[in-house]
Image 1 (cartoon, rainbow over the protein chains, first blue to last red):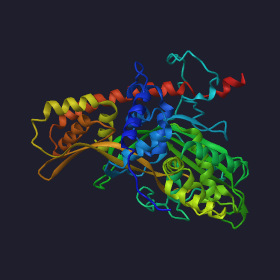
Image 2: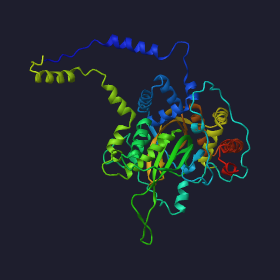
Image 3: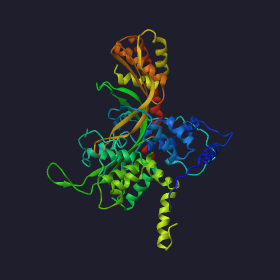
Image 4: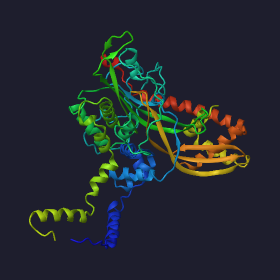
Length: 356
Length: 139
């Protein structure tokens, strides 16, 4: 069979684009970017996290343009990101400086600074409610003797360390790898894994984290030491003088999950003892489920178990990326005339035909 | 005042004051524009607390402006798309470096410090309303 290149879809494609634009927004019910920004906080958080670009306005615009299709919105934002120059690298950001707006521990009831519920849907009825009007905050008395500052709240792992149940590692200042500059290679580095997990598709990261706990990996119930959500100050020091510029706050969710270590640790006296290790999750915006799942997968990849799927960095990291996975799956609907003809020829030949 | 401190006060609590300062005094200081306000990215480097290593969490959109007087460069960088604020910050940075209009800036920043203290108090109170009181639960 011969192969002939063809053309002729231009008019149909133009008409398709026009039809899509017409279908995109119902006339008379158009909304603006400001409406999305003001009302779809969680969606914006997910998009920014998966796109690996923090900007609420651009995320809202991508949602509007993509008709609320998350994978398309992430794609648009990643594409936009690639058009912009990278001007700076931030100084080292430490979440100990976060202005905490929510901080809970599932492991200790009494933690320094207390359990601060902040804004969370965790305590609401999961029933559809057609009254979505704004209620505002009520005036209630606040504990006058609160001695902590919300921008310097102690971390729960400090408590574990004081008890001798967690050994803090010395600071590792090696420059991290950057998967946006260099393709990830296997076995992956820790920095590649964390960068890849934090921008993974929320559903994929959550599913694999769940699979890991159910028995396809470390298979142990992690204890969440701390979930903290808050405003993280960002700085740059372009002249490397130590006199940094503050450039703005970003919202982050951080999770530290306690995992009972499989192996014993040796203390100063040479005797061995059981300790805890930490699984770490950090995401743009308030993305608690994803951050928890990230902490589970971080531990699973850092402490691999046999041939478990969730301990296989290539399996996990190459399949959780929204743009990669949705891009490949959706390309299957595009014309594959030539490749399919080739398959067809072979099948016909096995049936005794001439392949025409 | 440290640069980290004054940039924080203007960006968090004094956008209007920064722009007003620039509009009022821009003709009092000679400067050339190196680059007009333009958008770009800042890659965020983070310290994680499991192994205490570093990784990149992603990028944030920033607006950058650069101006200069001789060899002295004024730099204005701010999160998001904020051309006016970025321009004003570059001018204020130049003023600090040249040590001009210092008294005017000190007065504005003193006001912004009060504004910030009030904001933090109010925001902290709002957040602490959601702090769990286990004593009350045991009653």
